[in-house]
Image (cartoon, rainbow, N blue to C red; front, side, top):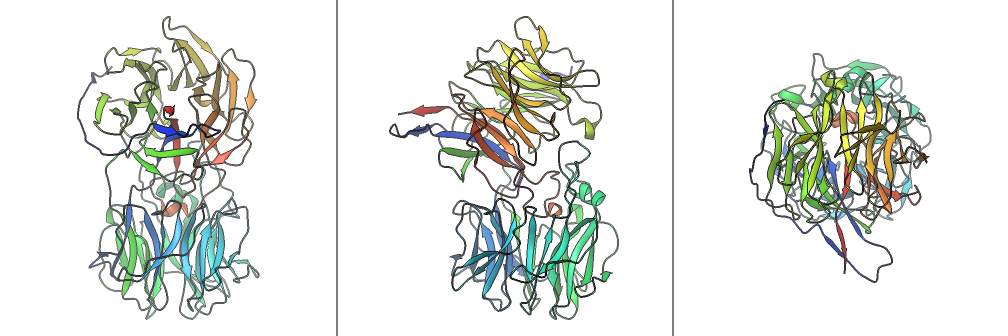
Length: 596
């Protein structure tokens, strides 16, 4: 085995005390959880010349601002912001004056488009349980659900004559499971409908991905990007492969298509410009703005929208890079406070010290990072020159840390081989518990700290296993090809885990002696990453039941841009949604809780 290295690289990071004091008169305990969000840390809006030059910040803010668009008269910039908690729609003048909040709902509101007469706002919202297109009448504040469909509808665009709304939708997508056997692929087509939802019609037959429609000035054509499913999978791959899309014009009356671009590369977010010109952005190594005529700029231009006169473009870009984060974020349920952290967070039950992986994705070469309970005094506790170290977790006494070490993601990296190891809290005393003959991962401690449950996935062995730490004796708990993410209850001899045994990834519980198997969740979309509250009363988990909330191609290098954090009672009842956004979220972990 390559030499294990213990480092003490200290990084100072200011934050807040994660131990939450609860009002003793409250009938329920207030909890605090950490989780990973794979979206950007902070994004700001910028306005630039049409080709991307001379960019200037529009409205710098520590919260996320994104997906902006101009009003037709150029007097307003509509955009999404999380500055006050949930994602809501705002508008501001192009000089940064006159900021106004237009929606105020705990659900996800995004992708705003103002009608050309300035009276109506189309936007995407999950307030009905999935991403639908809504219309807000600005004068009366009346909100109407236009699409009302259990699938996802995205990127609405008003026709200049006000007669139609174009949008993309995955309502006809088969949403196949990707090559890895877990993530779901995304495909969308373009539709048009009247503003009241009538006369709905599909205008593309790509059987892959067609997205981000924008109207021509005469309301006769749409400009879109499109590609086949295989290219979408490249764009969203964590390997950051370059997929190929093309920009296409579609005649709305006849559905006739005319491909406007050629060559390889990812081309997104197209827009018609005056003079029958068009613009779009590219991603990857040569990311930037492209114009059908004239020079353009290289750089990061996310969610661009050009003014009607074709002179300016508004876009957003990431302005913060420090990873892993450790900051308080919005929650839909105040009983469950949230902290955004790194991947696979874990808190010492006694000291509150925090550990997590140090990289932005589990696929990367991860080490174990430890920090104080307030996020300060960061240092890498354990690393390996060749192997990936994942899922560090504190023992019940806070004196040891278990983890898995090796190679993972066999659908990407080839045959996986990993072991379960433990160290002392200071990084000393490395012990490998398993025999290096299988792919072992995701350890979780028993209540007394004497055993560890973990997942095995190899050619000959699959399922959950329990190992006695003192004797290294192993017994197989489940015989399940897709059993994963086990979590031992701190209050009972019960283990929660993810399984596909009934056709969909759901959360189950089983007693440590192998009896009492019980299914807790029953919802479309994957449920995974379960974690028990310190008192054993709640289980947190990540779920894709809300579906996609944006076109997946607009979230490159993320194979599953969906999934929110939920909690439920230990018996599967009282399910509550805590987060609601367009990014992948997972690996929730509970913080120590102290009552007054």
